[in-house]
Image (cartoon, rainbow, N blue to C red):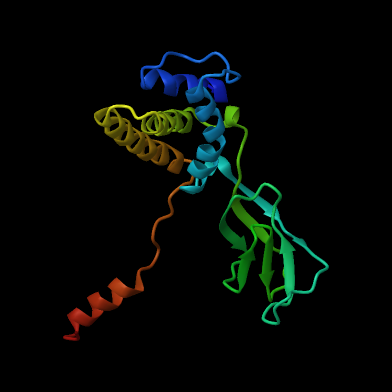
Length: 196
């Protein structure tokens, strides 16, 4: 089931005992706090892990700019919806990101970037929405000076549902078996021949 921003805020309100919310256009200060902080919390939560549902791959565009530092030769534009870096293809470690907009490198090979972006909230899986509801409830309880026990409870439940969401999300990427482990193989051979 897809949740809207209003539904997530409303469910967070019920967790702190404030009743449901029908609209975010409400003069209540707590509703305004929830609405104002939701976007920040949503983006921050996406950047906390490498969520597969929020992962994209896009070819980077080579810019016709000269790097201001002699160390670099080429500048690529990052995707417009870029939030967080995951990988670059072909793999290289000869690059740096600047201003969340540009990638400086010495390689002019075609670059593809795997990155985190912010999908529309109605498109995220229910396991992430559930986590976000608890995370927002914990934030609202803290900002509303609720009972400390309630805040601690909500924090622990948010952490639990984040772990559950991460476990669910990890199933969207198959695991690959370790084909070779040279360190343990060398250790094993060394112990058989009397080595250290």
